[in-house]
Length: 405
Image 1: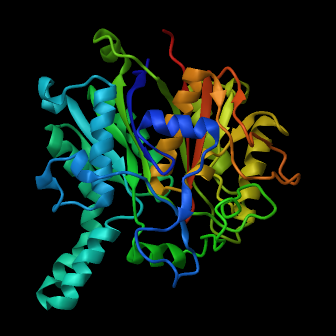
Image 2: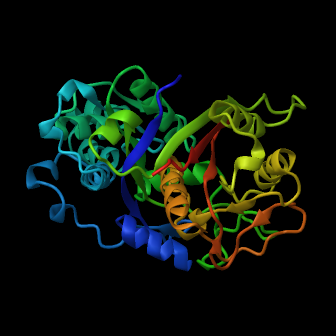
């Protein structure tokens, strides 16, 4: 029998709440963190809205020596990892260093750090190597900084599959635990709200250009016009269930199933791979679609992508066959951090028996899905399906479910 892997700690940093408690309170109440960009002057850009984390001061959470070595993304990730470990009641210094590892995801790389290096390039030509290497280096820095900070010498790595990467990282963490590692820090935090990162995101052609925070990010709405980007995500502590039980740890639930696919070549006439990814996750969890109480949607807010996701859900569950939600309408799409944040929300939904709402959206009748809008819906939640897609054809799905007390 495969090892059961549970989540014992959550560390959340979100535009609508810093810390798990504040995030979940805001999400239940439908409070959005989307507004005009403040980290730089966006007036010269066609897109000017983002989900920015309020009130995060790195010096309040991290040693001063780490501040010059890191950018905002890494600082937030380090703080979220600290919160997750504290939530799990894990003291890394009291454990075997080789029984702990770190597997995270990254989509935006080191845009802010790289931008600083480019400034050095403009002033000193000798800095070009550092500027050139910064993007690739920052793919790995979150994982490395977390493992170094906490003395974790077990399996470590970074998964890069755009916005599907957060789920892929959690799945890789589960694999490592099944191979014998006792604890893995996983999930993702992304932050690229800086001019260099902004230009890169605009180049993808999927950013909303609306200046109205209530009408900018509208998945499954006839007025869908692209997404609003954001910063943040969630770090999760994954453990072998028996080991967690033996130390008396509280469990939010189990990472029960995972599936991943890649879309076929455009123009091939074959259907996108999202439905198949969900089917693989359900099969891996050993459940049928009727066991799923809520779906956390990818929610691209692109008409073609929304239609493909709605078609996949209808094929799996039947017309309006399961509640569907997209709490990321309150945060923006957080790139690799988005799906881990949805995993955190799914575990909290299981704990509290409530499905958080999708805000500001007027669902199109063209999509035969039961989208939870406006206010939270009380539902006994035992199992949830979380979906994520990455630019270029990545599809990932994870089933989480409650564990017995």
